[in-house]
Length: 86
Image (cartoon, rainbow, N blue to C red; front, side, top):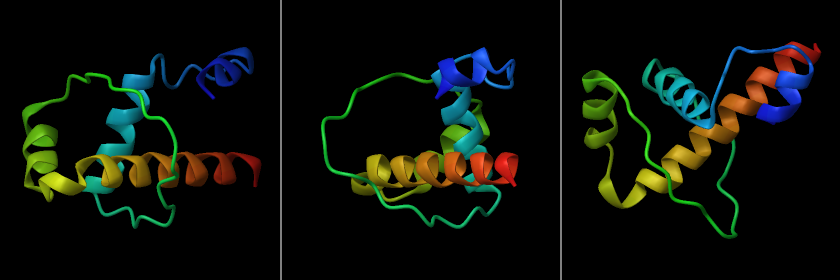
């Protein structure tokens, strides 16, 4: 997704971490999660966030962090690309 965006001259996000931060921020502001997580292999990564985002993420149910983050990412990307193509 990120490589394709850069080819299309969309440099809104420079890294996967940027996309994750944007999805979390949108979820924190009230984005309703409409997409489900999907089964399959997951990759672990570390993302630096500001204190407010970290506190928000830490306030979510700990056993659901990965599921919520994946749903937020999928919802964010779907909304972003649907609004661009509309």
